[in-house]
Image (cartoon, rainbow, N blue to C red; front, side):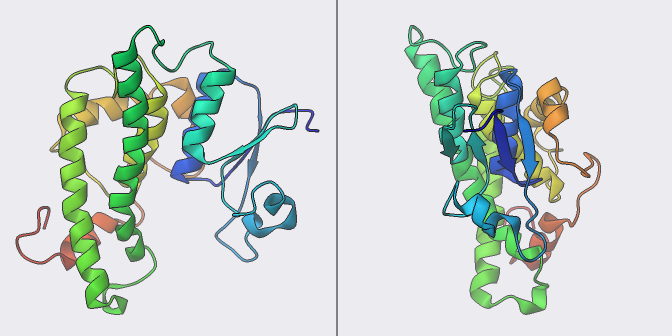
Length: 238
């Protein structure tokens, strides 16, 4: 049995980032246990970690009573149910607001999946990409633009992404948006999202959870620039 709450995380991982935000918003004491994955052997493949999550994926939350949770969106819901104060979801007496916050938290994962093909540009140069991969990248670039338009409309309506209060939807969505910015995404054409990102960025939980070694002003590498260079004429953003 653990004597202290622990969060196993990968620095800069969207999924890990979500949980770090949530535990800090809840004011829960925890021991951060960073896992290194950029060199072999990956610490997510260590026997000790695989005993917690056989999939070898972070984040993993280990409670003081020994309860183990994985999967970031499930962890967010678990934290809200077990530690409802301070609340990060509207109450059941406000079913519409509750449904919206939960739905948008889940939709953030769809946005991350749309972006994901661009990650293939992180290590592979354009000459190493097959025609199918190039087509997937062009499609992802278009998909990200559609996603941004959707979230921009939402950000225009409320102070945070689901309501005027910070919710689990923000814990889920903000890391997706901030991660894409780290990879070169510009919000210049999305003023409401830009204001939203800056608003969340300034929260103490977000400051404490921002990945170690990252800068808000520097994209490394600029995957969006690489994607635009590969995109066929007529692809939005090219």
